[in-house]
Image (cartoon, rainbow, N blue to C red; front, side):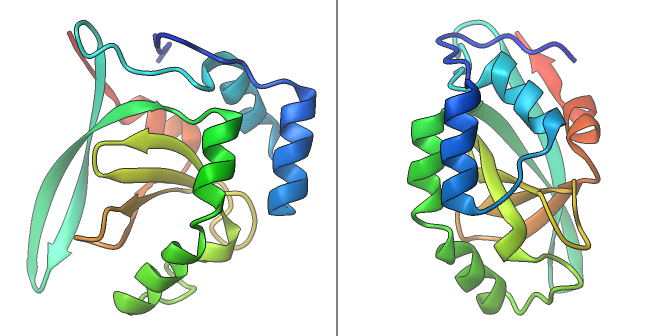
Length: 158
């Protein structure tokens, strides 16, 4: 899906280097290409919105939740989000999640959504998978196996 956002602030090579130095991650090329097209872009609430659904469990019951992309994080926003990365570990511990489900020390924030932040695993056994770090209600939820899969589940609402 080709996304349309307003106020895009393309990330350049220097920005990528600063993010890699801060996080100590080698950012994959497909994420760099995504950022070069969309970084800093915000949804236009008056025209196009990108929605997606995900499943959550409460006890034995499963529910479908809806969320909307607010925007793709800019360099500044990625750095700000990184300052709170330990919150993911707290969510993982609070929801009693194991490394077999998610390795929070391998996640990089890249999209802001109405329910929290979308992260991509850039290393480890979940490399490439997309997770939602929820605002606290449901913890950390696996959303898709890859960035491409995540983009394919987006629905355009005009």
